[in-house]
Structures are given as C-alpha cells and as structure tokens.
Length: 376
Image (cartoon, rainbow, N blue to C red; front, side, top):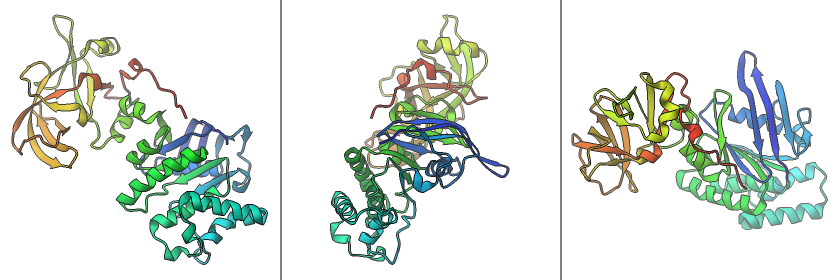
C-alpha cells in the first residue's frame, strides 16, 4: 500500500491551465474523492497521477518515490475508466487476465488472482461471457476485477459509475465501500456527483478552476465550508445566501439588516464579524436548517411567501420569497401542510449559520470551528 502526495502540481495545455499548483496528501489506505464541476481539473489531476499526462511543474509522490518521469505501467497503479474499456473480443476471464499476462505473471498466480477477484465481486458465473452479454453493472464489476487482480499500490477511478442508472449507482456505491474495506488499497476517485463523493470518501477534495478549494472529512467540509463555492456546490438543494448590512444595536448586539428584515447574529460570531460593521456580509443557511416557526416566539423569525411546494418523499422542498424580496429554499418534514401563496414564518437554526465576505466569497467564521483530520 502507498500514500500519494501531490506538491504544487501544474498542468498547462497551451494557454489553458487545467491544474493550477495544487498540493494534496492522500493517506495510505484512504478513499480520497476529487469532486467538482465539469472542467475543474479533477480528471486531469487523476491522469497526472496515472502517468497518462505529464506534469508541467510540481511533483507526484507514490510511496517514497517521485514518479514524474515514470511511465504509467511503472507506477504500480490500476485505473478504472468511465467507459470500462473492456476488450469486446475477450471473455470476462480474458479481460481480467490481460494485464497480468502483459507483465509476464506466472500462470498459477494469474489463475488464483482472477478466481479470487471473481469471488470477491460475485462474478464467477460470468467468467466465460463476453462484454456484449453483460449488463452495465456486470461490466462495471469486470472493470473493477481487472484492476483488483493487479494488486496495485493505488487504485485510480474516473467517474466509474456515471453510466449506470440511479438505482444501480446506489447499489454499486455500497459495493465499492465494502470492497475498499476488504482490500484497504489507497484509492483516488473522481466524480462530479456530490452525493457519491460524500458517501464514498474518507477524505474529500473540492476542486474548482484547477485549484483545490477545501480538503477534509466529508461531513466537516459540508458543515464548515471555507468559501461560498464549497458551500454552494455541496448540498442539494444548495446553501441559501442572503446578503445584508451588518449593524450594531444600542445593546451591543450584531444585527444583519436584510432590507426590511433583521437577523440577530449569535454572540460567538461577534469577534470575526467586527471588521465588517456597517459593511456588507453574506449569511449562509442550508435548506435543511430552516424550519417553519410554530411556537409564536417573535425573535429571529423571517416572514416569507410560499412560491413552490415540491414533495420528495422523505422531505418537502419549499421555494419561498422573503419579505425582503430575496429567494430562499427550505427542506421541511413531508407532513408539513402548506400551499402556494401561503404566508409563513421561517426560523434559522443558529448552530448552522455561516457568514461570508461578499467580495472574496471566503468564510468569515470558518476558523471558529476546528478542522477534522482524516482517519482511515
């Protein structure tokens, strides 16, 4: 097994910088997910680790070795591609054997490894079939099996579930989690699917515009984003952002004036927000941290009008307009009875609030919550 370390890694294509000086430590035996929108540089980063692209600058360590100048087959990695890349004329057994045969692995070792991988993935009865005779999920298992038999130091996976239907994706996510628990091989996984990232990862690296925006344990990154990009990218529906002017009351309390509506800032945020008095601040609140106020207590109640009601089974999404004119979404209990046009009062969970600089997008309160280190 091996850890992977990227140091000031850069990849340029003519006048386009696809990877812009990223540094990332991927612990031994961890499952690290690179997640971000299309074009953010995550697949290019994976291809750099694999040796399929050559870095413009920076270093790639696998274990104790710098591998920048090593070819892909010299890096002790195995890659699972988005399109599976199975040989159509070979059987499942032939596809799984091929890489080992190319490395002149002894026949008895090949036979044992193929059989062990097939049993692990429960595809023993498919070994004599060809890819055209397999379902998408079965082809995915074969692609995983072909990687497993290599017994590599590092698995690299590029959107391997993207071609599966929604139900099968959920099943395969569980299978990948189980597989990683059994093999404990260092894994770097690329996806644009935030749910996939949150479900699979020990460590998540959120990327945008060729740079890593934040790295950490998934729940911690979700609950404590470093900037508005991370806050808005993770979560469905995404975090609500409300911009207002920070003011101080006669009693020394901080208030965020939202344009006719006032938000009381919790006292624990006074110190980091003090430099922004009489200036603009963005309040961030996730939909699941908004509730309909039913107790009649007037403090921190925000009047709103229901525009859309979207029942989703385990929750109902409300699209609302605050009396300030700003729009907001709330995720409420499925038994909540409201209709389009209803006037409601909203209450924000004070323990889940975030505050951001409207110019830079950086969190003003991130440092008030400690980082969590990745454990594997």
